[in-house]
Amino acid sequence: MIAAFAGRQWRRGEKLSHRGLTAGLNGGAAGGGYASNVRASFADGAVQPMAEAKFAYGCASHAFTHVVIISAKAAAPA
Image (cartoon, rainbow, N blue to C red; front, top):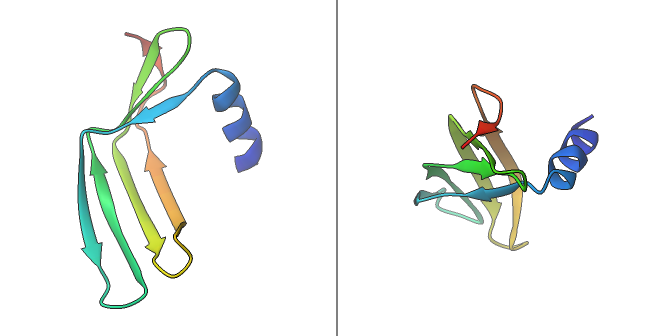
């Protein structure tokens, strides 16, 4: 279900951007943080602000282990 949703978004040309980041370390092999002023923009000019964006990062794997991005409204013309 998530893969199908992501595929639709990517086919629409979705690109995410942010203007800030607050990092937090867990004192070990994992950390995480919150992105601020996150929005998606699409090939047709529509934009979608995100209400929340947070992530967990595995330092040993050099990869995101968990990502949550929430929007309270649908994309609309800019």
